[in-house]
Length: 188
Image (cartoon, rainbow, N blue to C red; front, side, top):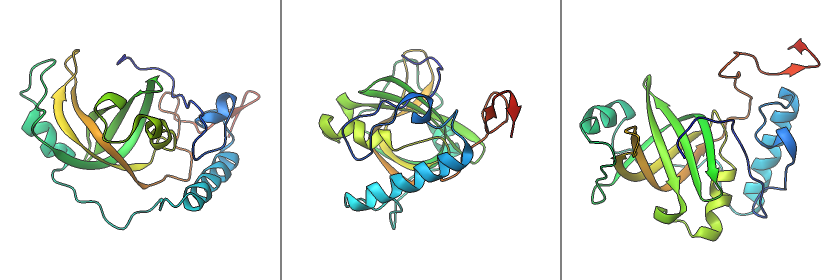
């Protein structure tokens, strides 16, 4: 499902402790609590043997060049034999199911959709959710995948692998209101 929706975080039994309610993705959390939750997530990753700030990620093409190069693809067309790697900031995360995530990845003022599905990922299905549950708005991620367009015609990269390159520790302003949070009718 490729429609915009509220950002969701489906808690699992993976690296992170289970989170309930709106605090799951942090959109309604107090900015201080969001920061503390992200620090706990970094500690959880490190204790699980995952380095949250990897040393290197090879980028084959910029997002702007990717859009220019593959803009001529038709709706539903995929280039399965082509592998590209790009990196950018996650500005939107949408969850269709525990096995299908959509991200809007921005770089150089240009956006591309990332379709991350368990069926075409190199990550085992049992680890797929764990990999994507740590990614939040504002994070810098690296994507390795193949180019294509969704059935609705949106240019996408179909992620075979997603790597968290730099977690964003601070809450981004809400995309709709430009505010970080609203508490009991007051805006901070």
